[in-house]
Length: 393
Image 1 (cartoon, one colour):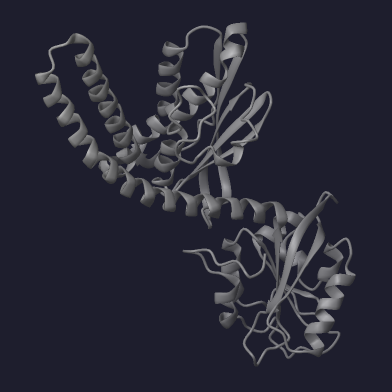
Image 2 (cartoon, helix red, strand yellow):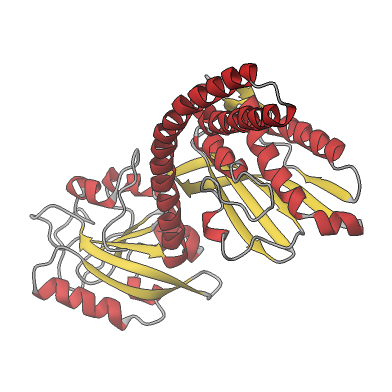
């Protein structure tokens, strides 16, 4: 990460530095540990961030640790305060070098990659950013942000998906209107021509023109569907939605397919559009079942609908205290590598006769619920994970 995280709707490390106060109520002296528990409330908004945050003094002693850092270390904030942050790294020399540079020369921020020790002694690769945490009259405060490299890659991927979705939405809208106008003229001309054609073989050609014009018109309408129909928002029980989807799919593909349920029944209702959610899940599940054709023929096609509550879930550049985490898992052949990174883009499909719109529309419907769809696919195991904030909690 080249700069400090800035999450819309959430305080960022950069925006909070101006609020920061000294680590202790007394003036910091070289070699003196910051008194535990004397940190001001100015740091506590850092608890809303999913990245790991520690505030240290010029000697590298912890003055404050946010909740995400506590969780990683498996210990409380109070226990961390006053300890040397370098003890949390597998190679502490890099932090010492950065602190020495901060003491001897002015700087805006320092960046390097390191390995952080977890509570279970496993190493977590992180990107470390060190920046002044306090105002100029308190130069001894340093803010250390540790972003897990895996999380950073996921955030980058989500941002690319969001940017692509916006770009394609605008492109589709413009393209759809440009297509629909001449389509109407083509269809009308074909109908007039059909009235003057008496030879059956020639009339067949005009029918082909009318049929294809209607097909393209329907395709354009499907592209525009998520943005034209007004949403009907209310309380939605996600398990009732899944039961509806399960019933529809089993009626359509009755042989050789098993759909198992693994539900957390404590999940509360969420605010959303029931019909949009049903359609989004139908698109995902129907795509998966079609990919299970060989398994269904062999009689061992299997899907799992799994629901859980995600705590402090981070997606769409924000952190949510609670979110619905829904998995749709199948034992199919997996998504081909050639299209794995493009499956949510319009008109991308590896199936003969596929329009390549099902997953695009599903992602659009879920995004309208401030959620996101992620996919992890290997041969024998494909997992579509849907995250939707539980905003009423």
